[in-house]
Image (cartoon, rainbow, N blue to C red):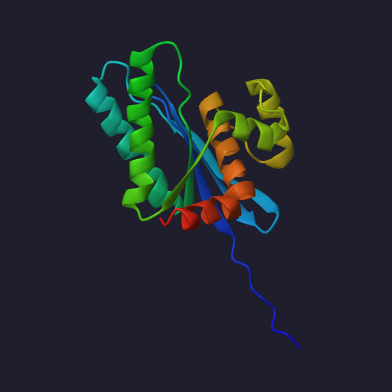
Amino acid sequence: MAPLSIRIPLRIVGIDPGLRRTGWGVVESDGNRLSFVACGSVEPPDTLPLSGRLLAIHDGLSTVLREFAPAEAAVEQTFVNKDGVATLKLGQARGVAMLVPAMFGIAVAEYAPNQVKKTVVGAGHADKNQIAVMLKVLLPKAEPKSPDAADALAIAITHAHHRQSSALRLKVVGI
């Protein structure tokens, strides 16, 4: 008789970077089953200069990672909009969102916004209401208090569904 394999649930943190609010969401993946762990957002005061906001995002995400000890992380890719300055600033917040897990030795995957929507809702151009409805179906215990926390949970779910192919891509490019 073959020995039974013991699966250990995998904790995943999803991060939706932003200068005003950086959403985070933690789920556990056990095979095909997902369960909600926690979610929230890091909200630096508007009065802080850019460097202070980035530091607040760093400190807030560090606290989340220490408290919930995820094994893997996923961050939403930045979409480029017409305001180049805003895109660059968002990119800096995204850099911090990728740096913090890396400092904890956690691998970071990246997903395009349309891929997140398609994974969670089934359509790449879904709106925030559709994402909220599907989150209730997929994670009934989750009650995100902000759209950013909801988006972060959606990013974590996306990673749970695509993590094998993401790991394979990293191996292929030699990382």
